[in-house]
Image 1 (tube, rainbow, N blue to C red):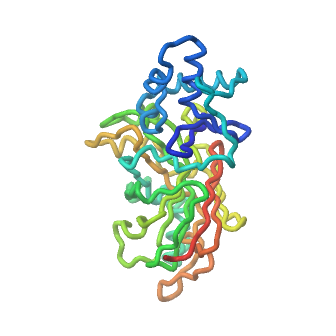
Image 2: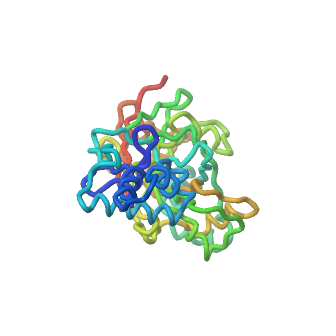
Image 3: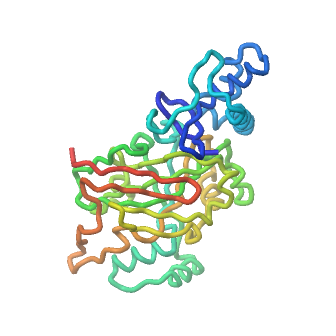
Length: 337
């Protein structure tokens, strides 16, 4: 199931033909068809119209959503009182599928073999291979690390990326992010994937010329720094996320073309790692890192440690992040403000 947030924060399902179903109203209509009294109230309880509440309801809400889609499949197109429940793509505004402003966004750093090897090669001027990274990992030298991004910097499909005034080296990273579906603490790697509700795309934008930003706080957090979407695909439809293909284009040119198979540490590790002594809640987000092809891992540095601006983003660019089974997240880059 592909879930979207549309118009005034309504939960919808994206169908194969691109149309969008208002799940809450469709379910209310199905309950009314069955003769259930107070169908709106029951639908609000069992299939909430807001994404965050839907995720918290878990299996019960997913079952109700399936029944709502079966109602649509029978040819019904109206709510209990004749409300419209199906929309064409150009008739609605699709927002980022951010469950809540309370959602925490954890980002795995240097978590792909090919990207990590490329970054070190460009930064040091010495050829580093994926085998070198694997050797470091085996020796315990490549420790897990990452950073947090603010949910208030999230934007949705087709929203403009505002070029931050403090940088001239804005970079892109196509990533797959897991949405946590239920509360958990000290989760084992063996149980970790059962906590995942679904997956979405994140474009982890980075200001690559921030001086001594050791915590990545400034480099990774600024207005519009986290495009997300266009939908959340439920875990059952994705299967194993570690096999997904991923790609990113700038102005139609392929920059990144890789696979989640290159992950150094998979989602089971990160869910277990982040839940040690800290409770994860429904709607929290864990982004798994990016593959090779970013401006950072393909741009060598000169003798002064500077990079050429050629492959970095510029105002007027259009960025398209694609992930197999999820879709395409498209965003234009606007001028500095």
